[in-house]
Image: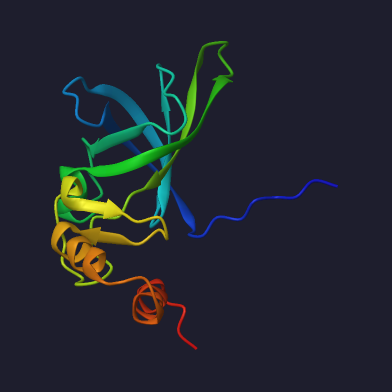
Length: 155
C-alpha cells in the first residue's frame, strides 16, 4: 500500500505563460504554468531545475485577469521536485512542482520584498526588524509562547 501525500492548499487548473529565474540572477526562461493555488504551482519547462532551488516566477500573460496585479510582479518559490516528462508527440520537457515562499511577516503582518523575509528554524517568516526583536528574547517560556502563538499553536 502506498501512502499519498496531501497538499496543504488546493491547486486549480490554470494555464498561463510564465518566466522564471534562479533567485539573484537575471537570466529568465520561458515556461507554461498548468495549475496554481495559495501554496504553490506546477509548470513545465525545457530546462531541468534542481530540487531545493530558490526561483523567482513572473506571470507574463494573465489574460483572464484572475491574479492580483502583484502576482505578475513575481512569486518567489522553492522547487520541490523536477521530473522529466514525455509528451504525446514524443517531445520531452520537465515538470516542476514549486512551493511559494512567504513575503509577509508572521509577527507584524506587513508585506516586504522577499529579500527582507527570513525563515526561522521553526518555520516562521519574519521581516528583518521582527527577526532582530525575536533574537533579543532569551530562551525560555516567553520566547516559546510567542513562537507558538505566531505558528498558530494556541490552546
